[in-house]
Length: 252
View 1 (tube, helix red, strand yellow):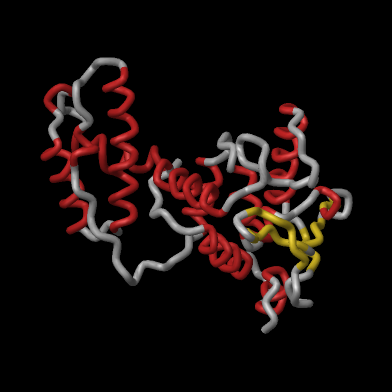
View 2: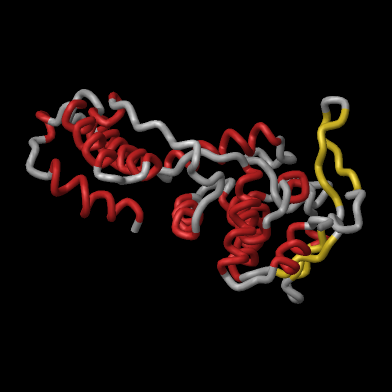
């Protein structure tokens, strides 16, 4: 897996023989610097630090050490040239990392369909047809006068039918299962809700998405970048640009 690769290829060979109580920030910093100089990407070096930081936080919690050596290091700066989307491997890492997260179904659905945040948060169960493996994107959730409200999509290209992949179907099924188990009051019949059963606020999504990406050892990106990622994954999977255009709801 993503984390095992860091441990097997980098952390264990360099630090595996170091006594836990002797592990210092300078040891971790030296490893990060060495890997960066050897050509490992800044995002991967940050992922390595996140992996080690997570393991050491458990050691601190259990009283094995007093301080987390990995949390006191300075990660390399991300290059401006790095793409503002996830590659297929990173997308899988994120999907695996949010498997048990409340916001997981929304993130997985976005990666599979490329929907805009307002479209996803405004999606209702009456516009989901699992038997046909399709969703009908017709509305979006917007903040109007300080309150979240459903509004019809204006352009013809935005109002569209999206075919569902296995990943998208599983995400919808998980969202439905959570609502059924919690028995929340959902008068608008929305598919995706926050952890208190209310409609999604963009700030809530942005905060939880970025936190999930940091936990996964990935560069934090906005929800809109998941849309870019979805387009990349579709093309990598063999979709034509015309098909991608239709799924994303672009006019051209």
